[in-house]
Image (cartoon, rainbow over all chains, first blue to last red; front, side):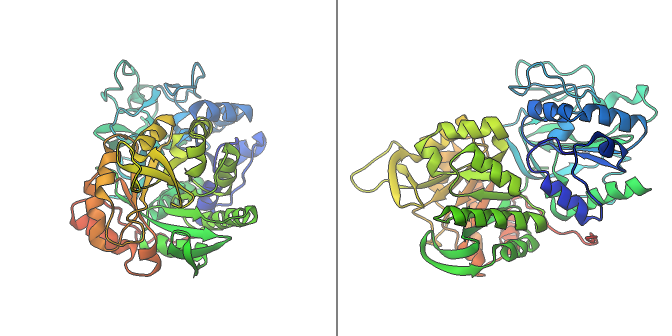
Amino acid sequence: MDHGSGNVRSAVRALERVGADVTLTADRDAATEADGLVVPGVGAFASVTEGVRAVGGDAVIDRRLAGGRPVLGICVGLQVLFQSSTEPGAGDREGLGQWPGTVRRLPADRVPHMGWNTVRPAAGSRLFDGIEDERFYFVHSYAVLAPGQAPVDGEQPDAEHVAHLGSERIAAPVVTYAEHGGVRFVAAVEDGALSATQFHPEKSGDAGAALLSTWVRSLRG
Amino acid sequence: MSVAVRVIPCLDVDAGRVVKGVRFQGLQDAGDPVELARRYDAQGADEITFLDVSASSAGRDTTLDVVRATAEQVFVPLTVGGGIRSPDDVQRLLGAGADKVGVNSAAVARPRLLADIADRFGSQVLVLSVDARTCPPGTSTPSGWEVTTHGGRTGTGIDAVEWARQGAELGAGEILLNSMDADGTTDGFDLTMLAAVRAVVDVPLVASGGAGAVEHFAPAVATGADAVLAASVFHYGRMDVGQVKAALAAAGHPVRQAHRAGVAPA
């Protein structure tokens, strides 16, 4: 989805590298009908949500998910799938609300969280199939914190969390976490046709290529 | 689980070619930047930095082409510094495939530039490059180090440690601290200055200048660097990225083991 965000060229190239036929488009029909839709995102929560809405991306994502057609969010493309963000400038702008929860500043000593970090693939993950002990490239200051993880002073933790949607769904979302400076946060979510990663698979060398390859292959399966 | 120490080869690019030499002096052609970036990627580089040392705008346009061509083939983050004067310059580089940009002289002249870039693109794209040296005789700053511009040729009298702190406050998401005293000496990083800057900034800190042996990198990390950057030692083949990582790992620092088997490009 071309919604005017940062460097989408890298995502295009990385998907092509693993064999996908990629079109960069803001056309609603094309985005709705593709085998898979990638929603990249770099920069501010507010500008990415605005960009996605401006091209009708929110409706496109809804229609795709209603039909069980895969969508993959990357970085801020993950964040905007949640309800809201405490990022300055996000203001009252709501996220796309596919999942409950608020994107918050990482309460860690070293922020931005920048560099190659390990993730612990959740049990039942398909996205991380065959991937163990690999590092992925992260660069972000905000994240969805793990349940029970204390937010920065003065913020209340969320009552609801994407990890706890099991009772409402046919299958509970599979949530993979990473840790930075003692803070656990959401690194990836797999929820039926909707998946997202906080890290940048397109910048994560061969480990990222393996993950993208798995996702692309799932589109044909 | 923790973030791996990043090992970053830096390529000085002048009008589309990599040049070597001690920052701006005795420049020699060192080859095709795309080829070198691929080589370092294959060695396990965690990030590639291009420093655009072109004097002309035509040279800078050529650098855009280099960034574009590299981003097509290298799937690790690219940082590009040199000659960035405005958010529009940043836009052009990001559009060409840069993930981060390094700002130096223009921010010294106009600190507000850092906030302008961070506001528009986020702190995560913005690296403040600080070229610092010991104050020359007869001058002083509170820390004893001053910021230089234009490749270390121009002293500013600005306190380097305070500038780094201020830069992070204005929105820089990372500080690239280059010691002009150590640069090119191959005697090791300036650990004293690194410690002084680490004490005042929370953002990631990249140590640069002075690497000459694989043993030089771990002390910089122990002093607080999140990443280590070197140029000539890699270009001259004195060591490769894998050897630096092995030395870091031996010292107990987490590194990324690059390149899993069995990922076949389509």
